[in-house]
Every structure is written in C-alpha cells, then in structure tokens.
Image (cartoon, rainbow over all chains, first blue to last red; front, side):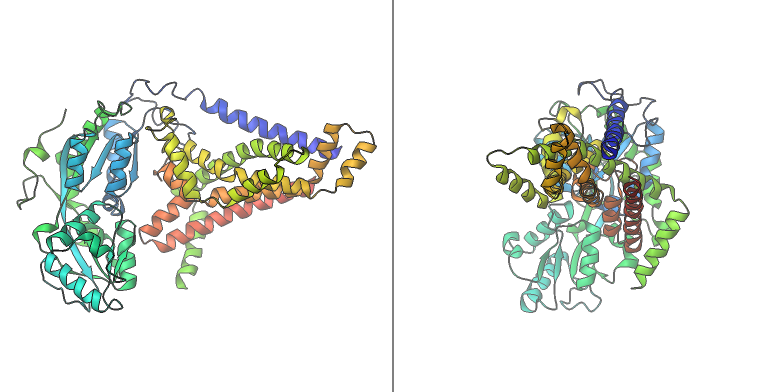
Length: 332
Length: 229
C-alpha cells in the first residue's frame, strides 16, 4: 500500500504542475492570429522572465551571421527596444535561410547582404521598404606562407591561382567555402564566375575545395585550423583576429564591396506579418544619425578600426554603392 | 589541455558569482526541459502501461516502431515541428515558432518514444508472479496494475532521467524552433553552440560543465527521493 500512496502523491504533483502550466499561460495566450498588433504595448516586458507563450506580439528579425558574430546586434538591440518600447527577437541565419524565414512569414524584417537574392525576394512581392545602412568589404585570407601566391592580386586572379594550385596539390592549398547559400557564398560564386569558371565545376573539382556549410565565424576557425584560403567579410575577420592565424592577402577589388540591406516583410503578401510599423521604425532607426554614428565607431576601441562603415555622409562612392535616396529617405 | 582547466575555473566562477545571464539561461534550460519531461511522462507512462497490460495483434511491431524512434535525430524533430508551426504551416496561426513553447513541444516529441519504450521495458522487468500474487491475495485488476507500477518505479524513474537527459542536452530542435533568441529562447545547449561558433571555446566548455552540474543535482535529488520511499 505504501507504493500506492507514493504514486498517488506523485500523480497529484504532476497534475498540479501540469495544470499550473496551462492555467499559467492561458490568460496571456493570444486568442487568434488576427489579434490586433500591439507595437508599443506597455505590458511587453512584464512577463519577460520565463513566459511559456508570447504574451504579446514580438518583433522578430532575421539577420545575417556576420552582424551577429561581431556582436553589433547585442549592442544595438537594447537601444532599439528602449527607444521604441518593443520586444525585439533576433534570429541569426545566413541570407539563404533568412529569406526563407521571410517567405514563410516567420519574421517581420530582414537584414541581409545578397543584392541579387534580395532583388528577387522583392520582385516576388515578399519584401518592401529596402534600405541600406552599412557596408564593408570582403577579403581573401590565407596562411601567411601563401602557398598559392595570391598576395596583392585581384579577387578573380587570386581565385584562378587558388584553383590551379589546389588542383595540383590539394594537400597544401585548400579553400574553405561557406557552402550555405549565405550572402558571402553568393559573393564567392560571383567571383568564380568573374574568374571564368562555372561554380558547379568548382564545387566538384576536388578535395582542395571544402564546403563547410557553417556561419562566417566557424568557417574562419576551420580555415585557420586547415591552413586554407577563405573569402570572408572584413568585419568578422577583424572580430576573430585573436582566434585565427590567417592573414589578409587580397583586400582590393571591385567585386569586394559588401552592402548590408534591411527590409520589411510585405503584409499584403504575407498576411500574418503584422509588425510593419515596428519594421519601419527599425529601418528608419538604422539609417538615423544615432545608429550611423554607432556603426562608425563600433569596434574601434578593440580592433583599432570600425568593423562596419556607415553609409551616412556618402563615403561609399564606388560603383555598386547604393544610391543616396536608398539610405537617406525614411520609409513609411 | 590548458583550456579544460580554464573552462573548469570559469564554470565555477560563473556559478559562484551567480552571473545573471548564465543563471537565466540555465534556469530556462531547466524549466523548458522539465516541462517537456512532465508532459512527456503524463502522456507516455499511461500509454506504456496500456501497451504492456494489453495483448493485441501487432504488439511487437508497435514496440519495434517505438524503439526505432529512439534514434530520431533532434534536427529532424526540429524540422518536422518547424513545418507545422511556421506561420506558413497548418498550426502557423498559433505563432509558436521562436518561442519557448516551441522548444518544449520539440523536446517533448523527442522523448516520447524513449519514455514510452522504457516504461514498457520497466514493466516487463517486473516478475509476472507479483501480479498473480496480488490477484490471488484479493487485489482488483487495477490494484494489481498499481502494484506492478510500484515495483517498476526505479526503472520508470530511470526512464524519466534518461528522457530529461536527452531533452536538456539536445541542441538541434532548440536551435531550429527557439531560434536561440537572447533572453527569450536561449538555452544552455544553443548558447554553447553560439559560443563555439564565436570561437569562445573556454566559455562554451564552461557552459557545458554547468549543464552537467545541473544534471548531477537533479540526479542526486531524484535518488534521495527514491530512497526515502
């Protein structure tokens, strides 16, 4: 009979706990998805601790990994939340999966850096209000010994040399590719194309070409371990400076420009996207002097130079830089 | 191996200093996995009992299928649930994606087969003579079942601990369904994954040690509780 009692006790505990969970979250549960958007509701943070369900609508963005890995979002997030009194959730993902989140309506805004994919996303009606807020450059890093001899070449020439040397001696010359449909991966494909190769051929050409399928940071660490060449954005490489042994070898080239775009999900196309006002606030905020000045100085203390370049002031003058109105005119 | 020592020191530091972010993440890990295991137990122990105490055609097949799902990858569970609760999915209206509730659902589904299968095994482990004895001493059918469950309690609790271990240590579903959102869905495993990605290997390892420490505390508490009764 002792056992019976024990189990009665345990069952009661379980019952109480479970009913507690359900009762606990039911008052807050949104009744229908069509509940009206509460962009600046004041009860947003009251259940911040450990809510089982979202108490109110949360503003969700998907952002490219380079901006996340450098810590910029961790810095900007609280500032935005405070200023607009909104709960912002940041999911980091390569541009490929970020756009997919957008297409499925799982996020309200996107921060990406793949102009071609963005254009298609916008043309398909998923994205609206695209603006630009920062830029930097890609670079090719490699081992200091530079076995393929690419130092100072143009990106296209460097890729050609890496390919040839890699085919000849895959033990010595390797190239790590993101391989994850991210913006950086798209840029890599563009450079292969400009160098006169077909990406499909490169992909399958041999053991020198390593498709990692990871974010920018992990790929840098991997390339460093393997003594491989890698195409990376300059900001992430700076942020990983102490952790990798690679050195920048190719830093100049028209193809290297990397512009970060922000856009909202089109509520006309994705009817579940209800946070357009918050998304617009976010877009305008990123273009504001406040954030542009932060971007201009972010990382200076730690790395001796800023990790990203702000667009404010029209510093970006190369071909491929966004037009003035695309980073100054607020969205509505 | 220097890193291992550093990680240990850092883990102790983080625990002793009650680092607010680490405490928050640990607590969230614990509470998400605990809810998953409680829900799982409420569903699985009765189902396991039903399967054990009833003879029906295809019983072996059912048990085989359950055991096969022990090896389902956490990412596949994540993907499966993602397709359901993404706003474009059939349950999209509930807006569960990237919330702690989504992680709970994922972890619960992940441990359902283990809990059910292990409950069946636990009950199988009880001597059949006990049931006969109970019945011959005048126990009703349900009283006999309770007796057997009581006899199997160590093994059932073992199943719960195993399920809890699988839930709190999985990263695939938590990453995919929770999104590793800081201050909202970030749990220990996704934080470890992020710190590894950032190259903060020592911090990542320290968080791993904290996870193990939590498991240790839970196990000790459960064992004390079991020995009392």
